[in-house]
Structures are given as structure tokens and as C-alpha cells.
Length: 142
Image (cartoon, rainbow, N blue to C red):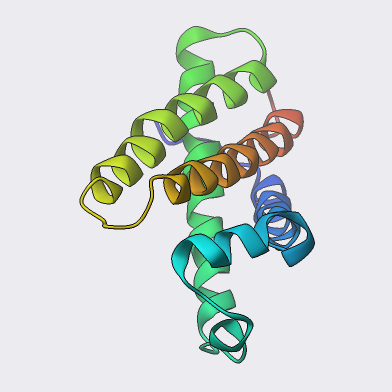
């Protein structure tokens, strides 16, 4: 079975994930705290690589696309609400892949695990917003 994906919802989820990141990491929100934890200064974050946002956009697209496909498969298997399928699938994938892998990586880092918590919270918000968009705009025919 090939998952049926609403690519407009995937595109909107990609855009929403970028907005979440811009707000979350804004210095007035949690950006200043993140900079302190990772050792950045205003000078070190200025004028970064021109590839940062294209890479973020591609990765956000891949995440939204995989979430849409996994949601379709979960919904076909379990039935029920497509929105609930999207949220539960997103949260399971967030916990089992994102947080678990971040934690495995970060326990070997000499920096504080507060960075892990800060990053995991951003990812939770991002995945939840993506799942809401994908869940509210299922593929045609569902």
C-alpha cells in the first residue's frame, strides 16, 4: 500500500515548522537561553552559512512528508479520526525517534542536558503543529 499524501498539507506543515522555529529561537523567547547553553554569542550567530535555511526547509519537508505517510498508514490500520491518528503518530515518532536519539547523542556531550530539553520541547511543538495541519487536511477520499 502506498500512502496517499496531501502535499498541500505537507507544504503548510513545512512553513509552519519554520515559523515555530523562528518564534521559539527568537532571542526574546528562548533563543537567548539556547545561545547561552551552546556557547554562542551575538557575533557567532550572525552571518551564518547560506545553506542553513535550505537545509532546514528540506529537513522539515522530509519530516512532514514522513509524518503524513505514517499517519495515513496508522489511520488505515487503526481507523478512527485522521486528526487523532496524526497527533498520536507524531507524538510516538517524536518520543521514539527524535527524543530517544537526541538523548543518546547528548549523554556523551559535555554540555548540559538542558540543551536536550530545550531542543526536545521545540521538536514537540513543531511535530504537534505539523500533525495538526496534516490531521486537519487529510488526503482526498478520507
